[in-house]
Length: 90
Image 1 (cartoon, rainbow, N blue to C red):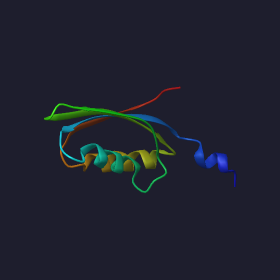
Image 2: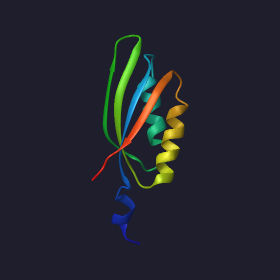
Image 3: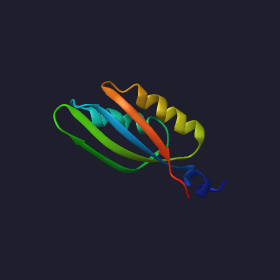
Image 4: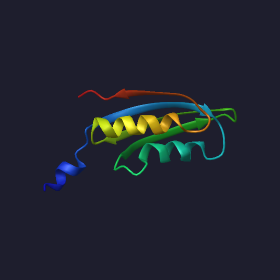
């Protein structure tokens, strides 16, 4: 089995996340994005103002199934207001 096939990503996906600012919100988002999968976090940036937390998460996924699982888990994060995704085009 070719090991490079295992690490070659299906694509890069950007998730824009808005939620209520609370302790562990970003940690919960990160846990949802990685889960037990082999997704790689390429970039993570969040800002909070005491009420709202906004951020962008860039994830490298291996296939569309993994992408859908990440999207479903993100929707379950407590305090989430909205998450939108955009697939990188090459």
